[in-house]
Amino acid sequence: MTAPSIVVVDAETPGNVGTIARAMKNFGFSDLKLVNPPELDRDGEAYGFAGQAREDILPNADTVTFDEVVENYHTVGMTATTNEDCRKHTRFPFSTPDELAEDLITVETDTAILFGREDNGFTNDELERVDQIGSIPASADYSSLNLGQAATVTLYELRDLAMAETQLPDRERERAAQPAIERLHDEFSAFLVAVGHPEVKRSKTERMLRRLVGRAHPTEREASRLTGIFRRATSSLNEE
Image (cartoon, rainbow, N blue to C red; front, side, top):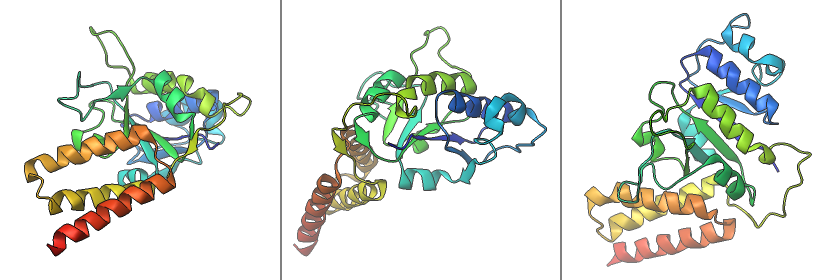
């Protein structure tokens, strides 16, 4: 199994990047990706906070775009702010890190765990594009964790996905590659247009399917079959 990639989006503080790299090293993760990172001076905070991760994880971090990540990985966006029920589901349903570990350990796929900005995390527009939502339960009096703390707690709970010496259960299924999942979503969007689904409701309906598929982890065959059904239905409707 390939351990999830860890993606840090728009970090402002180099020290937080270093802290996350150190936590990755602690719990067996190695692939760090940075979206619009701050300057990571080898004599600065990031390398100072990284511990032994300064030798490999930090210098080998890839700079990527948000688009590249969501288009090529099964994505889990970590957020401190959640919605309470399905009436507003941009940030719902969400899983705690231990629930994510139990879920992801049963599938074989390229997964990316995303951490957002120190001050406001992710925008709703960004979260609409990820496949699953994760959140750390914390006191209602002060639920927001420091970025480095949040990543450390999450990576600790997900450690069984990365540490080779851990005995892993047999996989239940091999999940479809993310490009196949994205084709399914594209065909579903075209289908909504073809059936005349109200334009004001389309984005919410598309998001509902993304969350459902994100939790279901369809196989390549399942994703392909559903994509074909939506494609044929759309074609038939457009011919009428």
